[in-house]
Image (cartoon, rainbow, N blue to C red; front, side, top):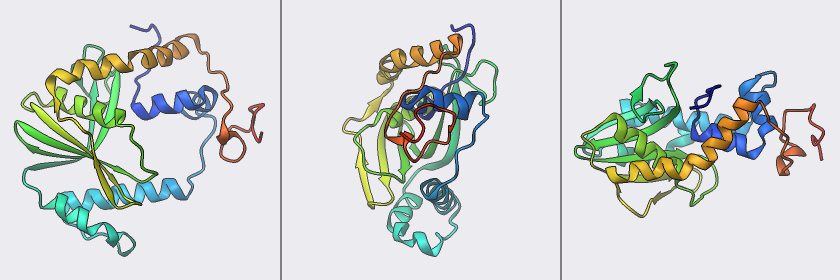
Length: 222
């Protein structure tokens, strides 16, 4: 275990890998704040609206009614519905409280529909369509660790801008849980090493020119 422990989530891992220096200022030192642009505002609006529509039957706002077909299908699907579930585990893969001092990994599930021993996990995505299912598979693993009765899961993305649902090709089983974490371990170890050594070098990329709030970075604007 790292001597200086910082819980990770898939989004924190991705942000660190994109640029360690930006991640450090936004998420560790917290001396810089990222402006809430249109994409972030849209993402928050969609997630909250779908949470209320699917979980509580609250009608979608007019500007999101184009998602009603999908929301109605999810809301009327058979099974127990869990919305915006905050799930955390410790380093022994045991469920723990979100804010526990032993928390090692965190994840939020937008929607799970349970018909035990089977379940479906749906992640609302507000960006461009991607075939990277890593975060979704990790969400499935966290859910299985918290709910031992789940034996199989189907994993889906709902792409809100493209009005399309994509499914992970294989049905997830409990035997997949260990492999999910093992495949991520090299990336996790890099993340943990950065925190132990307090080493967060800048990693210039296309975001430097217009989208990075860390103005003190030598690559800002380039």
